[in-house]
Length: 356
Ligand SMILES: *[C@@H]1O[C@H](CO)[C@@H](O)[C@H](O)[C@H]1NC(C)=O
Ligand SMILES: *[C@@H]1O[C@H](CO)[C@@H](O)[C@H](O)[C@H]1NC(C)=O
Ligand SMILES: *[C@@H]1O[C@H](CO)[C@@H](O)[C@H](O)[C@H]1NC(C)=O
Ligand SMILES: [Ca+2]
Ligand SMILES: [Ca+2]
Ligand SMILES: [Ca+2]
Ligand SMILES: [Ca+2]
Image 1 (cartoon, rainbow, N blue to C red):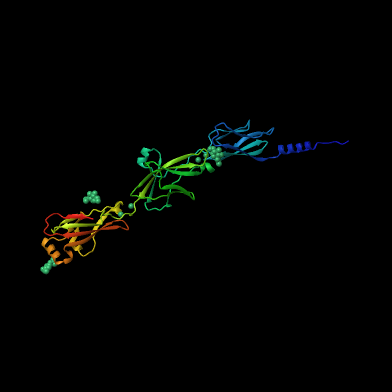
Image 2 (cartoon, rainbow, N blue to C red):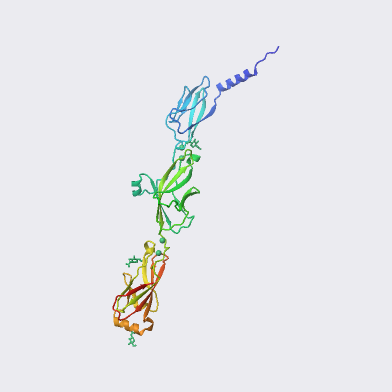
């Protein structure tokens, strides 16, 4: 006859001995969504018979019930300000339980444009609290040209905090003009406005756009700011006389106003500011240009000039003079006008102009 002691009992005995006499340190992990309502139970410790539990290091947002051993939410959570909570429970008989609570993200932040962008008085009156950015691009900027702009940021996690797309929509929609020559691109964490079509300040100098940033959360969230794109002038238009040459019949009287020089230039500012001069030529000495841009004959005495004309066979019966209009751009552009002055002395009428 043999006495059999169940092996199980021996192990149970050893286990109880160990657990009731030895100090232990454990970690328990819970997780809870940041939008979980107040009083939501996050988790519960497994009680050990004969033990009592006490909170040693707590957190103002989490309640620990030392009777039920439940952790619950006592005030709203926000992963963006605290993404994990660490608490410490001490038991009697003594052992330590670390409690780690992971706060899980929800997509509760829309993308946000930085506050340091300018707010235009006009726009803030029209659309309160909307952010405003001003971008300047030269009209000769080629396709692919990029200017850095302020993008949006989103503090949520992973896809919830990733700006998936930027869209541009015109705020002043032109009828029949649905596409704008711009797009927004992201590169190496920077955001750029990229030129995708031909620009021409002389055709259009302002694009008023709304830029919308959308995150990749689900559901996605978006926000927008105003983007005013100002096309800067480049000196890309020469002066234009509208005509190439001109014939003027002149009666030979002195200090006669022959022609009002009136070229145009589509550019703005200095790029369109014109000055006129007479180009060197066989007869340029006989003519001048007044401060009012009027081509005049240069001599003070009718007889003196007439005798000069008679003495100079080249200038009778016609004088050739070329006038140049030049803008003040850099570099400047110019156009010329060829003028033939036919001398018809004895004709007492006003100058007679034929345009070709
Ligand atoms: C993003 O937010 C949604 C709820 O809005 C959530 O279900 C999802 O887990 C979050 N994603 C990440 C990576 O946290
Ligand atoms: C200048 O020319 C334009 C057209 O070419 C004309 O409309 C305008 O009246 C002219 N001005 C003067 C001062 O001659
Ligand atoms: C024109 O020629 C005459 C003589 O042929 C001369 O006396 C006169 O000074 C000349 N006039 C001018 C303006 O050169
Ligand atoms: Ca977000
Ligand atoms: Ca969040
Ligand atoms: Ca010009
Ligand atoms: Ca221009």
